[in-house]
Structures are given as C-alpha cells and as structure tokens.
Length: 268
Ligand code: DGL
Image 1 (cartoon, protein in one colour):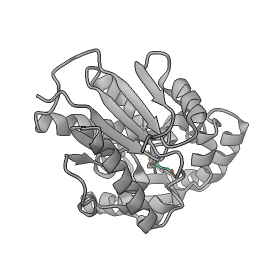
Image 2 (tube, helix red, strand yellow):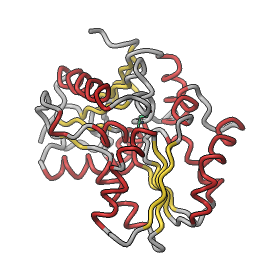
Image 3 (tube, rainbow, N blue to C red):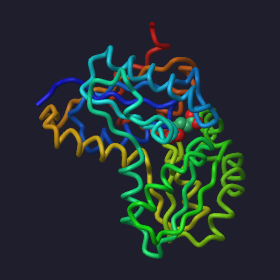
C-alpha cells in the first residue's frame, strides 16, 4: 500500500485521455499531471530534444514525490527508452505495450492502422512491436502533423478538425483496417470525429485509456495502490498557456472530474 500520487506527463492536454480513464478505474488515487505546454508539440521534435523534455518532466514529477510515472505520450514513449531516463527512480509506464496489445486483441482481419505524431510514425515503435507479437498483421501508419496544434487550440468537434481528419484517414480507409490505433494520446479527444469518418465497424484503440489500464496493472502487481475506492484528487501543472489547457480539460474531463487546481505554470 502506498499513499503517494501517480505522476503523469505529456506535452499538453493529450495525457488527459489517460487521466480520464484513471478517474474512472482508480477513483481513490491521487494524480499529479504535468502538461509541458511551453514546449508542445513534441511530435515534430528531434530525438535529442525529446530526451531533454522527458528527463525534465520526470525530474519535475519526482520532486513531487510520486510513486510511479507514466509517459502518457506516444512520442516520448516511442523515442526515449526507459533505460535512457537516468534520473528515473520510480516504476515507469509508457504507451506502447498496453496500446499494441489492445489492438491485437481487437483486430479480426489483422489489418491495423496507426495514426500518431510524425516522430512516433518515424520511430516505427508501434509497428515493430505489433509485428513482434504477431508477424501476420498488416499495418498502415500515418503521421498527422496538424492534429495536436488543432486540438490544443480547441478544435475538437468542428469543421476544421473534420476536414483535417478526412485528409489523414482516407488512405487508412482504403487499406481496409478493422482496427485503428490512436497512437497519440491527444487523438482520443477527437475520437468522435475520427469514429464518424471511419464508421462503427472499425475499433478505435485509445492509447490514453490503455496506458491508464497499464498503470493500474503495474500498481496492482507492485502492491502500490492506496487502497481507497473514492476521494482521489487530481492536480494539474502546465508550463505555459493555462487558459487553453483549462478549457480543453473541462470539455474533455467534464464537470465530474474532481480537479483540485490548475496551476499557472511551473514554479521552477
Ligand atoms: N500526446 C503526445 C503523444 O502521444 C504528444 C503530441 C505532441 O505534442 O505532438 O504523442
């Protein structure tokens, strides 16, 4: 049993797709969330820049004495191996394994699409892992450069995001997938739009949700849950642009979210 909080980071609002599921499946746990909005988007950064961001985020959360850290970020998970986080001293969960396993469970025709940031697609982290686990799967990956900036500016259910999504998804529809990995944790925020375009026969795999399930399983295995079934708190820290984060967070998490505070920038 451990009463410390769970630490989660992403470049911005994306990791809220993980928080949303955590609020549901571990309602008694406390959460400390860092959105690195100052350096967002991560998906067009170099590997060296991503290493710096990941290490800074880990350091920030560890200063807040968390019991586990999750990179609720497909881009960091794909480009910064855990072994390279030399300042990490708590258990670590990333996006790749839980997400890929959920996709393999969902697919029947073994044709899987991946949409993610350019840096995630370039790394081929998810495609490689899918093939390792099932060499028969056929995969199509598309980098969606515009999604994160659009989502961060509040375009989550309008004509602008719809037009952008239609463009990215056309080739995936042609490929005949029955399962689509939303490989960037921002994308579940626009799952409604993506689902309308892909149709109800295509299973959408929410990388944020799957990461939350990965966190739960890790805490259970390591006996680090706090044992409470309600009353958890969530604290949100951002490095910049508090207002935009606040409004997307409210729309996405809804009024039910027991948000304790949205802090204006990080203090160090
Ligand atoms: N939500 C993150 C991901 O899963 C970061 C996206 C970005 O900042 O480009 O990849």
